[in-house]
Image 1 (spheres, protein in one colour):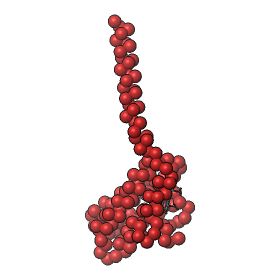
Image 2 (tube, helix red, strand yellow):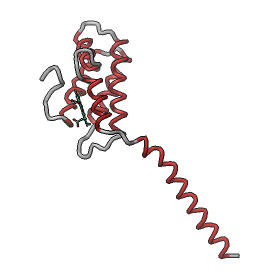
Image 3 (cartoon, protein in one colour):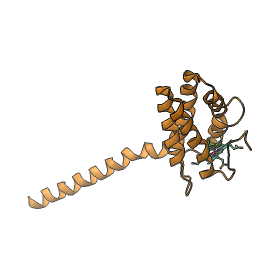
Image 4 (cartoon, protein in one colour):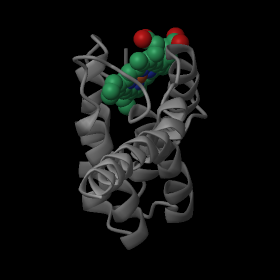
Length: 140
Ligand code: HEC
């Protein structure tokens, strides 16, 4: 009897361990974003005069930025932040980018120009954690 209980306990533990594993499985698959996909998102978010990055820069220079636009464009940076979490960038840290993107969304929501500019500057500087050029495209 004792042995049966012991065996059942072991079995239970094994089931728990296995279900824990399978629960992680889909996350792992989802986590696979290729460099190519990252590059496309990067380009879409930052490259060119009509990119969210360029538009946000232009809006934040105005006396009264169009906060709706800034809020909309900030979503591209938030999406980029999410993508960073799904790719292995080895030594390259997206922390500063993610932190700045979050702060920018918040500032846009609050229509806080000072905070938005600070967050945007932080975002722009964060490119250098992964890219060797010192500034954003357009300023090269
Ligand atoms: C956490 C790392 C990281 C940060 C921060 C980052 N990038 Fe990238 N970027 C990448 C990776 C990875 C690629 C994919 C291709 C590669 O390795 O160059 C890429 C690609 C790009 C590309 C496309 C290159 C091409 O020709 O296809 C542009 C443009 C770009 N990034 C601009 C920026 C700008 C502007 C910023 C800051 C606002 C920035 N990146 C911040 C990692 C990062």
